[in-house]
Amino acid sequence: MAFFSSQAPYMNPAIPFSGIIQGGLQEGLQITLQGTVHAFANKIIVNFQTGFSENDIAFHFNPRFEDGGYVVCNTKQKGQWGPEERKMQMPFQKGRPFELCFLVQRSNFKVMVNKNVFVQYSHRVPYHLVDTIAVSGSLQLSFITFQNSSAAPVQPVFSTVQFSQPVQFPRNPRGRKPKLQGIRPVHQAPMAHTVIHTVHTAPGQMFPTPGIQPVAYPTSAYPVPFFTSIPNGLYPSKSIIIAGMVLPDAKRFHINLRSGMDIAFHLNPRFNEKAVVRNTQVNNSWGPEERSLPGRMPFNRGQSFSVWILCEVQCFKVAVDGQHLCEYVHRLNHLPAINNLEVAGDVQLTHVQA
Picture (cartoon, rainbow, N blue to C red):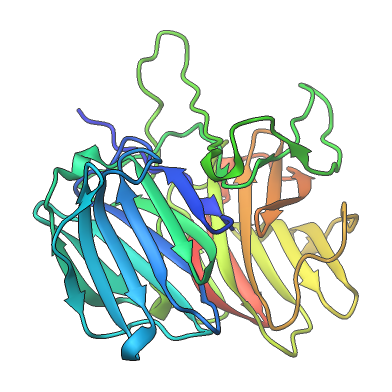
């Protein structure tokens, strides 16, 4: 049986960006980019290529804002461009957020912009040669996510998220209570090439233990309050990703990870207090609040955000916009029973992966 792994996302990658596509392109793989076009944009480039050299680009997707706006698609082989394919439409708006999805199909790339099919580009070279995505131009990215739409996809149970920046959560000494810490740099390759991703297997085990494919919900499915189940509940290495926009007059919002009627983890930014409150509620009673932070309030009224919650054996680790925020030691330890996600308050959601 083939094991299809769901690659962890790149969070807030700096532009220009180049990152590895683990395992290369496969039929059924969907790659989603979410971000904002600059107000004075002139072009956007997304390349699916072999390695970092740009000599072999299987698919070059290039919106250009000149002459009323159009999109160029092409392929480069051994440093030579082929014939351009142009679509004389511009699906992006300057200064506006966007969602751009590439679905790898047997005969072509299917490209969707803001949930609408924009173009299909027939393969000129075998897509399995692609192992790198490169993004440049007049845009800011919130994240790049990878999802398999193949039948019976699974992900490794033990994996860590990857940041495009050389950042990782601080590790905890075994058996000690985690403490709040700042960010610790990773001495690795240059920023654009950095990938942090580990897979652990039991002794004698050839493949990572299969888990549940993360579920990404379309933008139209985001009423607030938003409530959804987490298939099979939480487990060590399970990631929850929430992205959205804080309302301009926001007072507060919250993200709850629920276990039945109890709240295992309550993450509650409060703008009037300039605090991010963490807590647990059992039998309708709140425990002691945790408020300390390594730096300033990471959420801002009227601005976009991305929250990544990593469940580990001892605690939850939280990153906001790719930067480590806090750790929260589990107060409810039966992780599989924590199987619902709730988001409510003064936010608009743009992406949820649970």
